[in-house]
Image 1 (cartoon, rainbow, N blue to C red):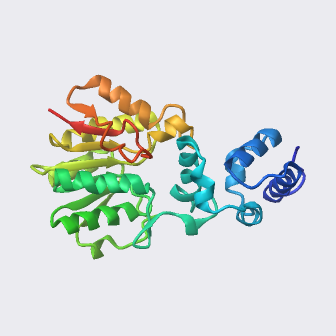
Image 2 (image 1 turned 180 degrees about the vertical axis):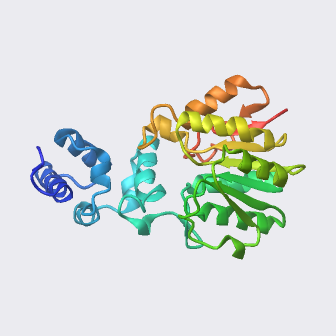
Image 3 (image 1 turned 90 degrees about the horizontal axis):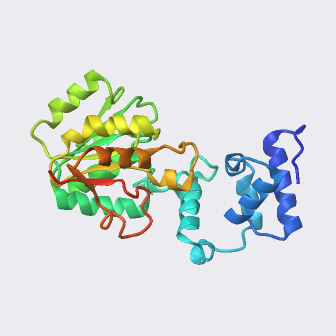
Length: 286
């Protein structure tokens, strides 16, 4: 079933998808979307980001969310979470986007729970964030640290134009704008982190060489017993756009082959199963 390439692309894809669902007598779900994309030779992103998909989903979804996930495999659930929660703002359903106190947060609930457990355990002076997007995660980390009675967030991004809150109002958030690999940013981080206990969370450019460069530059700030978290290594395993085949997971594995100062903590961060960063919680042991 091909869509009419002479019509507007979004409208043509939406019409073809509705026709597919009717002809196949299917509900709208990930399996149906995958089958349609294969048969119509449509890139999945074009369907998931289609502005008409929300209306289509409301017409062809006859199950609650619990019914949707009850029989899913873990892989299917992770895909559901990625499109409908983790980056729902990008795929046309912003009301489904995970949030913390009204701030969009590009994490997962399971990882956020793990983070608060690890932060309480390690009690860092500084949570160093590489990559900020909207800044919602910074608010979450700052709140956890404030509840603990100690610690601040130091965030770095190439641009702060996407930040949707005033960090000054938090009282324990500081942002630095610039290239994480630049001498100026590194010098400022060195000044702020000298003599401090640091917990690093890296969630910036997910291309392997960039991730590896950041690990090599910033892992030195992590004290023994604390963590350097390479986020979104799941993207490599799931093939999520736009991460190439060589992404965060490949970078983490290469770094681990270069050092014996860190070990990948595979048990505690993954105890809730659905982490977005498998093999990515690197604990400093020497």
